[in-house]
Amino acid sequence: NYLPAKHINFSHSKIKILIAGQYNLYMKTAFDQLLPKLCNEKELTRQYSITFLGRGWNQAVKQLQHAGYESNSIEYVDIYLEEIIKYDIQLTPISVGTGTKGKVLDALANGLLVIGTPYALENIAVEDGKSCLCYKEPEDLAHLLKTIPSDREHFQAIAEAGRKAVLKFHNREKV
Image (cartoon, rainbow, N blue to C red; front, side, top):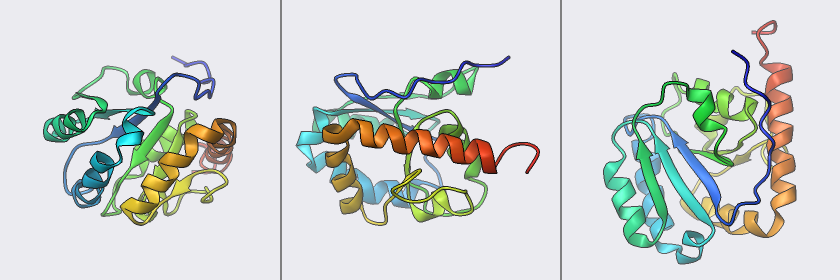
């Protein structure tokens, strides 16, 4: 069951962000630091929609909607890869680094621009600013998100470089 390669194109009126995984130990701390910053950046509400794929995000969705974002939560999908290719960016605010790489690798291999914390991107053959975007503080992420809409082609190229790097260096034969 092979899916055709996703065409990387941030051309919708709103760039679609996906946060994949449960609201639990792995993402709770980093996401909780990020949420107030996202809610206070009103200009981002016009440029992005945010979807959560996993359990436990209902409160975050409500807060983002209250701040003006188009936001929703999907607890479960039958075919994970069919769902994630609907998005442009995967935001991965991981605060604890074990057992979290699968969703990051899936997003990269399927053409999403991955923006994550250092824990989200460690031990993956990608480079900040070239094949992914890494942020340490919520302010850094807000700055990145403000930059992307005005230079979509540049960030689409980073997503494509991330896809190529993961398919080359994390392919089945090498792993």
